Length: 72
Image (cartoon, rainbow, N blue to C red):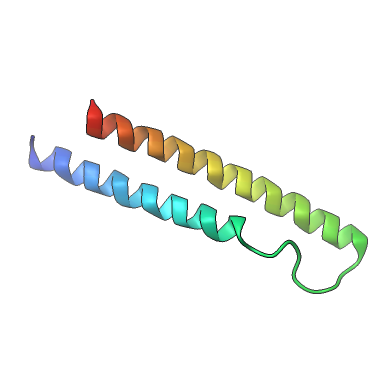
């Protein structure tokens, strides 16, 4: 095991943890802050859902990479 491999593994692990933390923060946000029009509420919920899905997919990909690097 070389030092470069070890540093890359640690960097990937830290990035994965960061992605998972971002996902958890976005996932637990309240549905809508404050009172706005129905149109604004729908737009916010749609944007929030897309961001949660995007960060969730990124986190899943990083977890898969981290597992592959550690076990392969």
